[in-house]
Length: 256
Image (cartoon, rainbow, N blue to C red; front, side):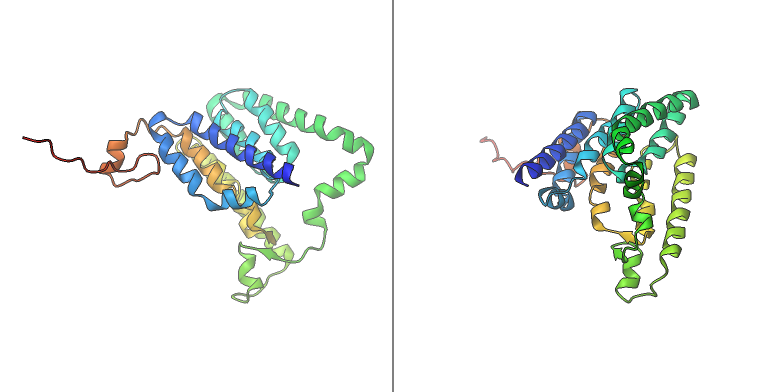
């Protein structure tokens, strides 16, 4: 309904505000320009995507992952939407890299405990129905559809493989991106927030709605990077333009 759409828009605006709040002051105009230019964010949010309900706490968890309350935000995200689940390992990899295995275990306990508390009433009510709901993407005979690798098969550009083959490719991609995140956990700590969605590209069902939030997650990673202060003058000299820091109009020469 209309009320839900308003809620989703507010969630997107709040997530954008968190990204800007975490970023260096000088880079905020450029991040804001990129966020506003990401048409997929606006189109799917206005269209009524409930994914924003999990994206907001997920962005908060990633932006402030050095804070322990970030694990609670992650717990909220994974309790709301299954698409948030792939981000949890990458979050924990960064906690291991920054604060060690013991703290990562605490964070996993906090997030898992909140997930259990939120889902416990549904499990008690009907455990079988809850499990079937969770496993629907794997257990139901859904037809192939998406914008990922399966699109080549459904559009006739390549042979359409079996659902099992795509599942194996998705699992292999998940192992690969986790290995990359682990190897680069200190040199490229923000990579995981984008890598988390890569395996879904190889899935039997890789709907565009799975990926429309990638710009938001990417800018959340950029906001944490030590870019330093970027002045409008330096950006103009390098050819960068934003709707906030446009080139100054030419000034008339002072009379002699």
